[in-house]
Image 1 (cartoon, rainbow, N blue to C red):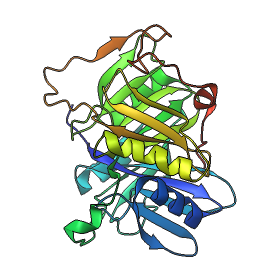
Image 2: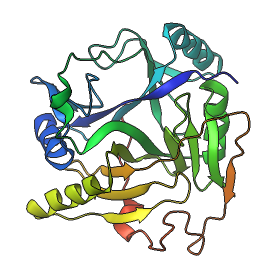
Image 3: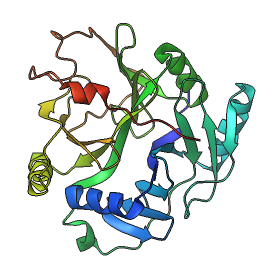
Image 4: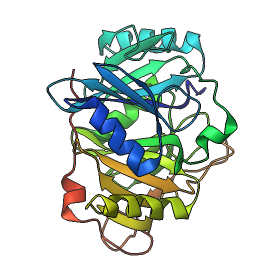
Length: 293
């Protein structure tokens, strides 16, 4: 199947405090605040206008996960496919400024996607990104009420490729056209578990931990190395209760035709979550941010 999605888009988060949320992310990861208004604040780790958008609402939750389409025609194609699947179309306009076209729809398994045209790039001098610990929004980790049904939907509807899975789809990882091991992952439940940034190096993961300690906080889990994806990881909680991962070294798959997805056992002895043998704390497993209409 031809790729429809080029790369990770954005995460849109509803929160009573957009500015405070954005400033906390900037303090931890070095992202820039690209725009701040009374009802929304936008942050970016690179020249793109936005990686994470915080919209002012009384509730906290995930409004949508953005996926950047290969071209404008894909937005129309995804709209057509979503309608034919009987999915609920929430809007045919983007949640963000500086995005030309989008279609936002709810899946029957919980997650809400917004497939959109490219995010506008800001004209930035090269030195403006030198102080950042992270360089791109890497992936999101989702929870679905029926992970196998979710697998069938996203591979059929969005053309996502399966990179790895556990035997009974306790976890599965999906990639798009850019070849990185996963644009999103999924497990059982209902909501979003975390969103992840790609760091420049291991030292940046240490820098996030140092920044947390300076504010009287600490890592939720890490540093460790995942099995699928083979990336180094660290996790912390943001002010909205969302888990943020800062990752380095995610595997890149260079040939869709010859790559064979792995099938991992999902148990405490398999080291699927951490090759180095640590187990996630209870708070990590319980963390979940709901999707909200």
